[in-house]
Length: 216
Image (cartoon, rainbow, N blue to C red; front, top):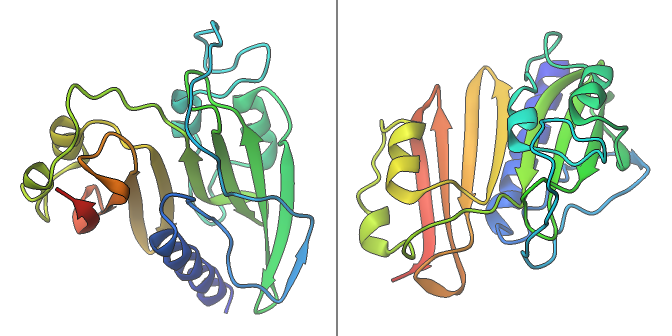
């Protein structure tokens, strides 16, 4: 039952992300919630922290530190380990219960060299990380991503293939329910209307699903 509850929560999260990519909301269906925070960022901008370490004295988070967070039921990174990686306690926490299974979501504000609104979020069950996300990565691209470029992305391509073709995404979510899944969202630097986006999901390290809106 616990596994089913976790999977159900992941599906709810994925559904909300899919319908609100620009906001990248990360909340799951629940029967009770304690504490609150909003995972709805504002417009992107830029930060100017000069510290290059994965754990700066000011607690500014890096993409490299987030990558070190391990995901897995009973084996994932603990809350204490995450706090050590990020150099501080979480800025906000919330607790969600689904089918009598409780999980805690912790969020740390601010990425080094990230957008003005940026954060990392980790969901824990039994003190082990089962899901992680990062929002506000600043992607430096020479040209805007076009529909023609997107159409060259195909199932079976690796994360390296996609990054080489499109550049780094603006946000990433990683889960590991049965098999590793990683979802990339592109919301800036697109040849599209203001509501354009690209969403690419990798399963076991290769493209398994992709979608876009309003690319030209």
